[in-house]
Length: 140
Image 1 (cartoon, rainbow, N blue to C red):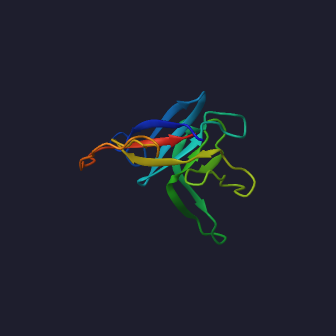
Image 2 (cartoon, rainbow, N blue to C red):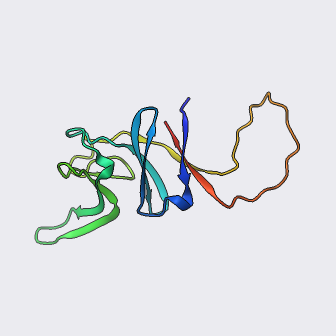
Image 3 (spheres, rainbow, N blue to C red):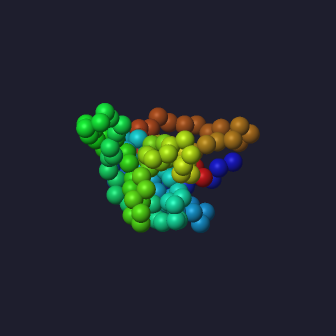
């Protein structure tokens, strides 16, 4: 079963921002890409550079000769060492997506007062609550 790591609240990680955390000795970058959260190992497969410190940008898209189309703004991370580019939402490389991929981790957004209760634990009286802040939780 995967371990869970609280990263931060959703208010602390706005769209376009990242947070790099240590989870069981692994450096993992958690990114807010347009309101959805994605996590990847902070290690470029090229020469093991600190990928998650790279620039988040867009990239050139396939287009006809003489036409230059730019897209995927805010979804591409560029390794600060040698410029290799990866899609934050899939972990796939821009240059060879079927062959070069990053290790990605599932991320969920859970209520700040969440707590799972095993089936054999005694039940207690509960009261309705509202959630005002949410935690971003990394599953490793």
